[in-house]
Length: 453
Image (cartoon, rainbow, N blue to C red):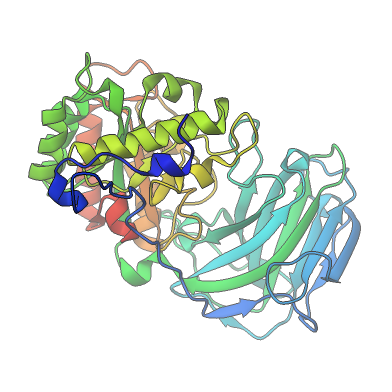
């Protein structure tokens, strides 16, 4: 059986590409995502000046030298384990700094680096900036635990960025407009990192850094959108591509290789037309439909590696240039034998896209490019953020990305000409209306791989 490393190699289409008839090219990610340098940093080293507060603190250590990834220490806080969903003072475990020198967050995003011991015991994490001991404040939801796929995983250091377009609420003298634009973005003296556990026992969170980085608006003044499609449905080519061609928009289609040319799916000729004539990125989703249905976290590491390697080889051998990948079912956790799915995908592709969008949108460059967020289920059949009327309406995600900064990745599956019967189906009229709304806002539209490059 081939080993992980041997599967990185694939047959050349032409001997000249290989340097000779017997050699093989290495198939590996072509892009290296950029790193956003911090404009202001708190790494929680000795003398950092932050404190612990809240009625649900079990224990804490403001100078914990037992585990860290920067400097020689981090902040550790363990909840008492009895929080309720009210999130009141008695439910909180806070790491905070009040009455500090004022910070200007105009054109800035907040980047957090932290680790959660057991996400099953976590209800949510929030972050606040404000003044007057947070009597005036803006609040972001950093992470909300769900029973399905979680962006924050147990026992790993993660980076989360918070942009103005994703502010959840305002209080006191601060406010949000109807299009979710904050009343001010400067003069903040207070910050709070807040943990609310699930009430089922203590959870430990280590906070390593709070940083300010340039937000998406610095590079894309009117916001950035990537329009993506999963599962290789041919109706996207028939009904979605023409609406995008109207404005010269280029998409990313994530391909299931062994379904190309089958009933209702793209043909190879259609994929080539999308790439060569409309400028699309033809990217990867799965080599085999059977593995796609099982999901990468539903099979072994060897099966994932075989599928990802075969997919990358198929793309190269068929002349497709995409370097992006979308996890089957959006699931990027661990294989059935405990190996990180992300680490395997990273052997072959430059990014990995999820379908998580509950709390925050992406930033450029993304701090975790193998865990890209996207909004999925965009359909009149859906409620909330994914309904086309809400997406394009006042205060919707297009408004937030355009007016307050953000990289909004939209994930469609089918674009049909009949009434949708599930949230994977978007009517072509709704799709065209979303394209018009993007164009009216003057937003940049780029394939995922081009954003990363």
